[in-house]
Length: 295
Image 1 (cartoon, rainbow, N blue to C red):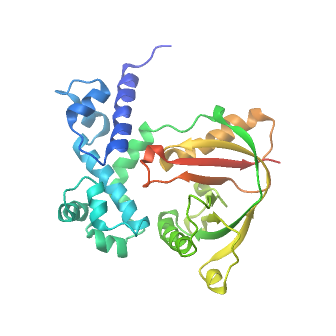
Image 2 (tube, rainbow, N blue to C red):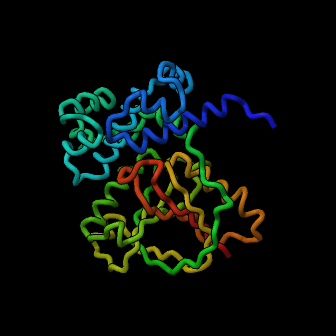
Image 3 (spheres, rainbow, N blue to C red):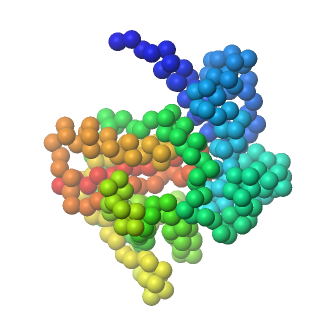
């Protein structure tokens, strides 16, 4: 079987995309990136633009501001000045100017009043490139585990998937008040429906944290309820990388592994256990265990 020369080129430049994601918090020059691609520095920038329809410099800027936007929304304890430094800017003023060009809002206004329906629109090109260069996890890495019964506090996001960040904010704020740090209390997503064939206004996903705490009336008013994840045998597939390819990994579990396994799914939805979170780690280092309950 003949391999297309362009496949080798895509592979080499996919390494560049991963390198940028891993090291976006420091200075990156074109000579370094050309070395990652094993490509002439005299031609690297043109080849990058030809492959991805965006310059490498613009791509790096998008990666940095996208991660900063996540920190502004979901890590509210981090000062904006620190977020600016982490994004590679020398001061908050230059970061604010760059951020405003993308979002037409200052970082502080964005943190306080995000446009949940449209805030990711400036990153459409970034997300397209990541979908095309970051691959899902191979289904031959599936293991069968015994999962213990786990009581959780669960908050459902119901409505457009585009607005799930708003629910995540409330979920994070609640768990901080109750001192349920992710390092000690596991985090889960419960996939009550398939977003591919569910109307946006009927979409439902559970955000859950492992805890035996009792709920107050105030907790219930905020939308929290007790949800027990059932004990039993689960097929586990570890996904490492962006949520952009998480769907592909879950699909591989059903398409490639399940038909040949002799197993039957159990009577509970698919679960994602979040192990390492973006933006706390680089996007390609985020870890999610996909858990399929078995009969």
